[in-house]
Image: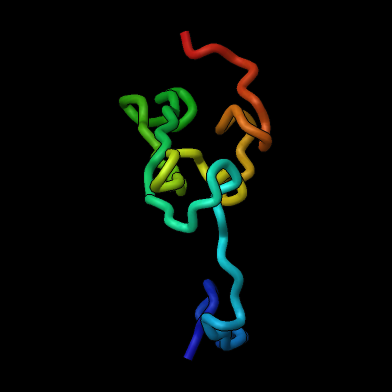
Length: 93
């Protein structure tokens, strides 16, 4: 039984078998194997209301062969990664 955030019954996701999927390949080298890594972002104590600055981990996937970040799976956060999502326009000074 599946419940949503309110605790009520939700729709069950469709059953998908592996033969109904397609592989995801690295856009740089074509590899099909990826590693899980983390990008770290810092949140100011002023923004968070905490006593100290906070570090926020963001899970990303990188190609196991060439190290390229799989940008298709990045969250849509402006300035997160200097690729096709949106480039950083501020310096980290």
